[in-house]
Image (spheres, rainbow, N blue to C red):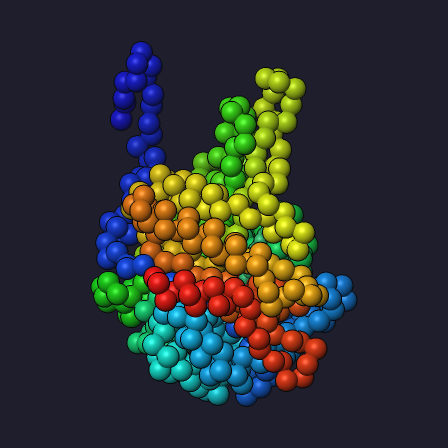
Length: 472
Ligand code: LGS
């Protein structure tokens, strides 16, 4: 078609991507939900209990230097044996929603057969949640791939075979648990496990290679997502609007901090490069033009019409893990060029590397609602980190302030009419913070990992949530 803009003709190719929002994402609004989030590998421990197979994180922890304090999650919080007590803590805080993940190697054996003992454990966890009056939100993949799928012949997410393996795993989870789980997340932070695991190497499986090579894994994750969502919708969701499936992205916000065009363009570039490269495919069915241009010529980013159709509209909600914001500033002599740089924003508390910038959350929500009008968004993680050796660990006033500031923004976002449907705090228990070991603590409940009994002690932030949820 041809369209006239001022005195200029713009030719819009007929094959241009349709950027209207698929209807599905606009229907069945959720009521707002407050919850607490966690992940299997970080809390469960019981690394070889009841027939559990090994995961790439069990292996990665054995690599010298991979984990900053040389620890592993073989025991972690021992949630596997103490889930009743910990679920009771979450209930007593007043949370009505509980985000958890299923450990793939716990429910499927290396020979591909279901591990009934592992399945029985999750069934008991779901029972305990139901008894406690909490709704589960279940992440299928929070990074612990079975080691048997990360080999020379089958290199994990780099292999196209992973799509069918993930389908088989998801099918099992849906068959056994879909009746009791109203909210599913296919992947947690694909950018982190793809680029951390298959490019930078700071996450399992620790592969170091170029970004161009890692794009193959991006493609496989997206195609696996689309297939699993199609399966869920046709066999398990059956048009029931109370049942949802989505994806969770790591969403650091990028904000222009000067009035230059360069900074505005830089911030937009970063948001597209880090966030829209995942959210555009699952909403519109294709990568942003800027992302394709950055990785010019990558065949991994070329999606067929069928693949685009499968991806388009493949989320009922977008999960975002929001922790912080980076500033983007012009980085050249006044007015001279197009270079920009990333600068830290907000408060760098002495106790932490995490800069608190609550305002960034609402700015990000506005950006998302501008790009994807009407799309339901759920904050699937938000929380604050303090060091493991903090002598004031239990009186965590900095964390209280962080939660206070961010929940205020959540309320503001709702008042503004932004389609924000839920918020999950990260996290209930101090736990194994991946490559950060036990040195980085996000819990509202302290766990003493030096004591074999792993005693739990509630922090000020836990009591703050208790009061906050009582009023909400
Ligand atoms: O434990 C993880 C949390 C903690 O902080 C969780 O498993 C992940 O899904 C998620 O990545 N998590 C997380 N991310 C925060 C990254 C903050 C980045 C700020 C860096 C400043 C230098």
